[in-house]
Length: 340
Image (cartoon, rainbow, N blue to C red; front, side, top):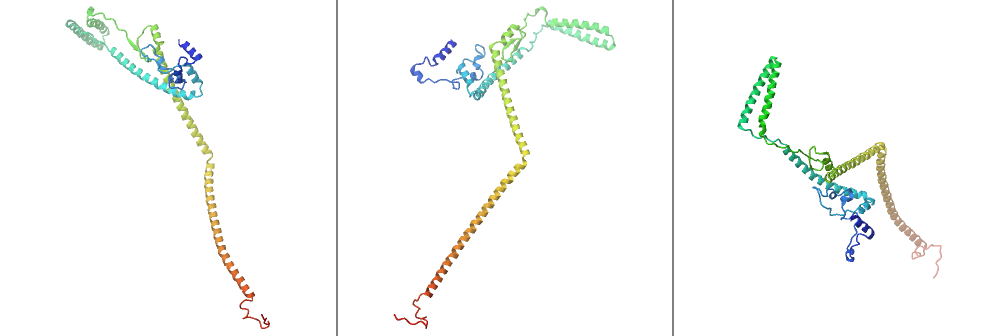
């Protein structure tokens, strides 16, 4: 059914069954749409791993489309978005593993309680008296064995030890209360799978163990754990490479500075000299401008006096040459008077 639907989508489009009104509001889904599952784009979706198992997460509410995944892998933005999708998947897998580890711890506690020894049933008064007599005999014989061993009588001590062994067997039979104990079948010992948290029968048949290992739950949690380990390892490697690159760059800068100390000093001193030269040039220009200003002001003052003196001299000469109003006073005696 899914294959046929995919073929129809390819031939007629995903909106083939929509009406005209529905097509107006229809939005084409691409691999970077919010409706697309980022876990599926990155690697796998956890919802697909545990279908019909005790750990079933239910159906995913986002789109899983192989064509969208194929277009994502061919996209030039693949590497950038892959880091984002893998980060989201790692967070989801971490939560799954944390929940699973809590179940594993509770399972261990349960197994530890089941493995506690069951206390034996209480003995009757008659059996208790018989047990006390046998224990007293064993105690006396052991004292005799110790004394014979100190005296060097090894053969006699070994003969008494045989009697002690016989009394120990009798003691065990009394504690078991002979054939009055009910027949109890031993319970099967349970074991816990550290990968998926399932309970198994210890030393079970190989076929059942293999069936568990190849089951969805075991494979699913194994895939989740492997992805988390791989993701963390890749992150650590990326951080280490970044750290080494920064150290290498810093080392290259340090070596470059060691190779060119004089150039750096010359550069600093040259920059300082340029500033000093610029300051001197400014001071020289300022002094030159001030000198020119003073010279121009002085020339203006001198030029004004000269013009006035020139006009005075010109006025004096014109007075001396003109036969003006003072000609009658300074007329020469030799010059005859001219009648008017």
